Length: 99
Image (cartoon, rainbow, N blue to C red; front, top):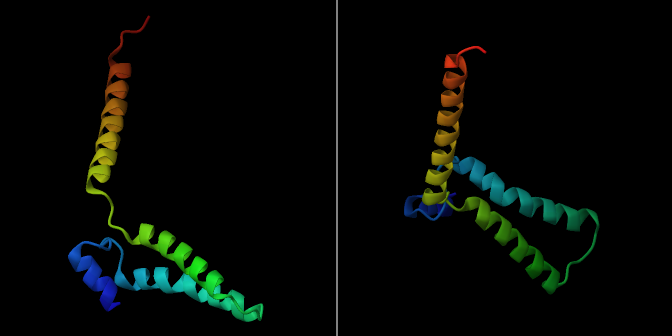
């Protein structure tokens, strides 16, 4: 967890998720891959191990990255505009004269 904590301090790892959950996020998939190989009683080749490790790293690294601040701001802006539009439409609908 020390590596994850240092990553959070440096801004390389998201800090909106508790360290214990991040640890589970990292070790859980590795455990499942190992259990699959163990229960199937099959030996993985070095190439299979490297391929699996690289795929896990790709998925995990994307999940561990801090959210993009610009994207988060745009998402919030979109939500704010949608909410303002809904309120405006609700207000406008209530003030229209009846036909």
